[in-house]
Length: 424
Image (cartoon, rainbow, N blue to C red):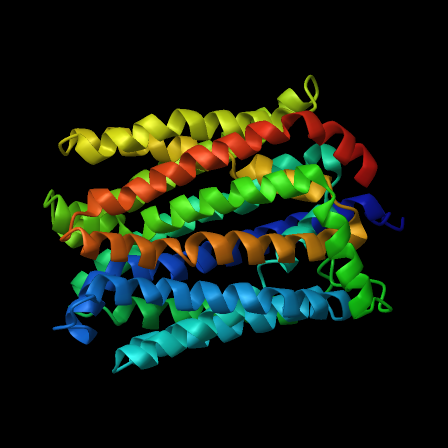
């Protein structure tokens, strides 16, 4: 007797899951690569910036160089995603940023290191707007919040692994360069997987092949009139400003300003707190947002805004609470700050039509980074230098951004239902 073939639905589900797992793995590596730099930047400062007066402000430019190139290149790769295979773009992107990350370890001057971070940003720009729009196309709206939560849980987990890898590997090899060399290998493997695994779903271009530059500009103008999209992007910008500055400077703050422990230990503990708090908060935010949306249409905005408002006093208490008690408050603050990750990215997907979605994510990436974590690391470093090394003064900029993000998201609550229906 001839065996019956698996139904098409089974193959579609299996393909979607494989795509999700591969993109989660790449996103983990993405954030590991970003935050290895934060873990070892005090060592880089001592090696390449020794004797510089504004060494902290210059060190912050390493984050700015990466994010600026990432932000400026994202619209270009969005344009390519409209016309080319999305898996091809993702594969090439991962290979580019992995090679550039390895190049960071080879840098012998601060200028060369700055240049390698620019190329890391260009590589990640090809991935940032394409991956979430691909997943949004593969999964229906009722499951999208949970799926994107799993995808974005790579932010806290990957960030934590980056801190841990930076601290442990630099200590073990007695060199800040070692973590960059080691991360190159899995990046090349994952990039090759995107290019070589046959039949991955979602490979088709994001557009219809006839999309012109004028079409993209018209889409961008239409997004300006989308109230949920605009308020969500403003909230994400303020949140990105806060998290970007916090993530870049916290190990240095704990080890060298508060003198609570060594840099390697501070990076490891902060990474552990980030992975647990961020993972729990990201998954909980997506699940709770999905469930509350069945009863209240503006729930994604509401849970995001409330999380930030609750997180503000937790963060302020960290600045004046002695360690190790401050670690507990830091865990609570990070939980609140990551709670919005799934809901806010689900808002982006739900209030935009499939043909506009890739453009919407690209513009969102451009705005939140250009006005967010491109600015915050060097600004916090500059304020700290201006106030004689007082990092608490620099971190007060973060607290203002936390408050703003919560207010923007609460303001978007009444508009979400209508904007979601309009996109559908």
